[in-house]
Every structure is written in structure tokens, then in C-alpha cells.
Image (cartoon, rainbow, N blue to C red; front, side, top):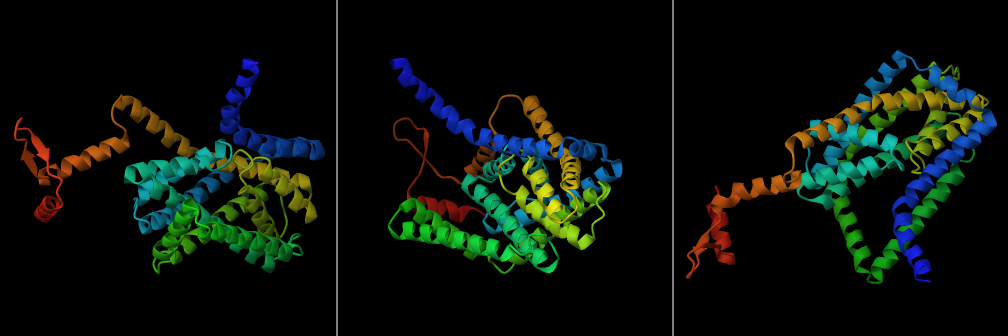
Length: 369
């Protein structure tokens, strides 16, 4: 009986730890299995064979542009929240996160790595995480707005259902906002603090006069770059649809990739491509081929992130055991301010003891040049 009672206790932590990742993996594999059953494996093979060095070079160039714009957007938001980061460092960190998002389940673990690493280096992990969260949210919201505008302007098979989708999304967002507001009004401290933090970030950060125009411009450029890469992949794969119709279809596919239920978008991307291409009369197999080609060239385009991560590992091993980056930063700050701290000798031992009185602290601050 004791053994029976111990089994759930051992399984529970494992399920909580690996369950979401396994669920995302299962979702992507299920969609791929269904596609292979419906259209066969030939479209996937055609997508792999259609990869050319010209397509890879175009994807690498456009991804460098979109990554630079994404890093610019992140830097603007991080600076507004008080955890500034340089553009070169932000670009390198973004490449790392793109590669991790492409090979790990969920598509957000790279962003988590980027947020925690920057937060530790800046001395405030919470603000670092909020900066990345706001950056990702702003990018996805603006992408959704651009997608709606494109679908309302250009012909597409989802255009008739778009008003119903917008009404459903608006209703769900409104219900969620009412639930959070009601919970905060009932006195739940955690939700109340979260609501105050969100309001403060919006008021003093993202909605500031010099912040939101840069974030909007960077996000629009990112969407344009990703769409251009997908158009090139579709053309190389042999799609001859008019450019306007193709752009509308590809915007729908990019929206489906945002859903965190696969590894690197595999499965959902190909499923969405098969659906929209079939609905537009272009053939589901052609959609799978174009999506496969796009996935391969994008993986090659973010391979720089793998090189940067490998370089980080090599530097850590050469450096050997020692304090972490956060600890080294704290040590440097302490050494920098040590000459300005007043000390009082202990009456018995004669050893220096830091004065902690407010007047002494103010006097020490006054002496700082």
C-alpha cells in the first residue's frame, strides 16, 4: 500500500515538469501524421529538395534585418522600463532566442532564456522578464492588426469569417479583463499588484511619446520581413498565385505559427498552409511544400544563434568555476562604491563596522562626486 501511495507522489512532479512539453510535441506530431495521411510524404520531400542556396541567402539576409528590428524594439521597451541594453548585445541575444525557439517545444523557451539572462545582467530579473514579455506581446498584437488589415484589403478564403473571428477575440479579451479587474477589486493582493504593474508599465513605458512609435515601426518591419521570406519560399516551391492573394494566405499561416503547440512551428505551420492553400484552390500539397521549404531556410537563417550559444559554453568552460555573471556584476558595483562608505571602529576589537544610520548614509552620498 505504501508503494501505491508513493507512485502518484513521484509521477506528479514529472508530469508537471514534462507534461506541457510532451503535449506540445504530441500536438505537432499529430498534425504532421494527419497531413502525411491526407497528402502523403511527397510534399515534404518536394519542399526539402526545393531548397536552393539563393533561397537560403535571401532568408539569412531578411532574417538579419528582422532580427535587428526585433532587437531594436526590445531595446526601446527595456530602456523605457529601466533595464537598458545595447543594440549589439540585444541582437546577439535575439539570435540565441530565435534558435532555441526553433528547436525547443513551445516556441517561448528562447525568450525565457533571453529575459532571465538580461535581467540578471541588469540586476533586476523581474523587469528583464517584463521587458521581454511586453516586447513579444507588442509584436504579436501589431502582427495581428497588420493581418486583419491585409485580410480586409486583399482577397482570401478567410475573409468572410473574419468579422466573427474578431468578435470572438474581442469578447474573450473583454471577459479576461473583467475577470482580472473583479479579482483585483475583491482584494486579491497578487492580482492587484500585477494590475498596478501593468498600468505603470503602460503609462510610464510603452505608451510614452518616444516609445510606441518606434515599437510600432519596428514591429511592422518585422512582419514585412517575415512575409517577404515566406513569399520567396512559396515562389521557389513553385507557387504561381498572384502576389496579393499569396500575401494574404501567408499572413494567416504566420498567425497560426504563433500558437505555442509545437516544436519550431512544425505541424501547425504545415497544417495551416495546407488548409489555406486548399481553400484558395491552390492545392493542399503545394501549401505543405511551401511551408516545409520555409521552415528549412528559416532554420538555416537562425543557425547563427547556435554558434553564439556554443561560444557561450566554450567561454564558460575556459573561465572555469567562479562567480556567475550576476555575482561578478555585484562584486564590481561593491568595489566601485566601497571608497565612499564610512566605517566606525569597534570599541573592543577595533575592526571596521559599516555605519548604517541615515545621517551617515546621507553624508556618504553627499561625498560621492
